Length: 475
Image 1 (spheres, helix red, strand yellow):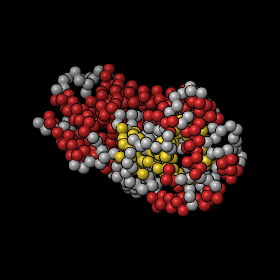
Image 2 (cartoon, rainbow, N blue to C red):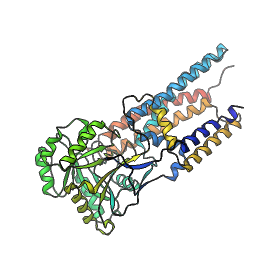
Image 3 (tube, rainbow, N blue to C red):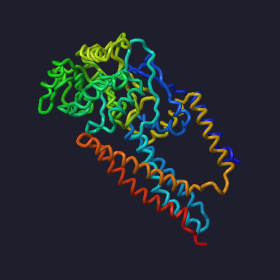
Image 4 (spheres, helix red, strand yellow):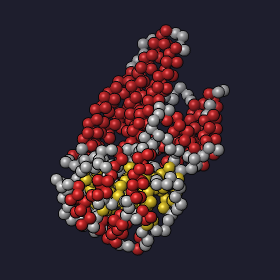
């Protein structure tokens, strides 16, 4: 009787967390942490339909410290399986059955680890249908000042897909800031000027310069060479040709003192950068914020998107009246003018907020807190999606028949599918590595890793499939 209605408990927990303890998803100002009026959140219908899968994956993707929290979460899954396996083995009376359970447990463990690794790859590398921003303001446009395509040594996304990604995430304009290369971006931007691409979002030309610290050189046009030049010369050249310079992720401690960059004449600093962690040390944040306010330096949010990693979580809102009536050149000039003027009143740093803040001092139990907070963010339609899928699973459980695939075979199938996914993605990266040879280093690096791991995992999965599907058991 308990197994027949076991779904009732999770349904009740989900309903309570989503109503009584609700945490509404909203957009905040990164400088004040207050909610920003005029902006909402749009949830993809595809996500709502498959909420129990896509919703959880996306919420994990938006973790504050994903590179630390995701392995911990997957580690807990393996830990629970090990504990469950040990319990099943100890509770078995017959020696023969105990031996079979031990073999089944040991055989499933590599499959589960491989499946967890594939899930980790899905979360970080696939463009899932994430929630995005809705701009209901009259005079504000959303801009990225920091993004990398496959023409950067650390990028994994084509220019066209980068453009589509920014359009899907509500941006009106975006700078491509590939490392040590802006010629390809200039070509791409000129295609839009020739009307070979739709006008929105606007493609803007930049470059990330790796000098004493990484800096975004924005608004580049024509011939511009940075190789071998000191930071001071580069900053002066960018300004001479009407551009702006922003210091990227200065707070990671790899550059010089902030006073050094102020004296160089930079226009501002990234006050947030979500390429790795959503929040860095808050004391350092306050120090940098106060310094920028005291010295008239602009503060922006660095999306630092490379075609993989966290779903979009930051936007810069520029106040530019009559944006819709401007041509492309006028729009570009208006954005550059806001940057050069360093007028913080015309720039808001917007951040996606779907959970309370916590620091990275103790993340061991963060997956459980994350799961609770995830259910708190659900709206009515997402809750109904959970209800539908849980009830469907319960019905299938109640009315299962012998011709249903047993669990030991299901996990073997899941392992093989996971291995096929890893190999397919590795092969795709290998194709892209050859297409952009001499630019992105990551395609070749990740393709080798995925092909090796995927091939080994596939061989093991096929062996298990043979044992569990085709090998005859001796009686």
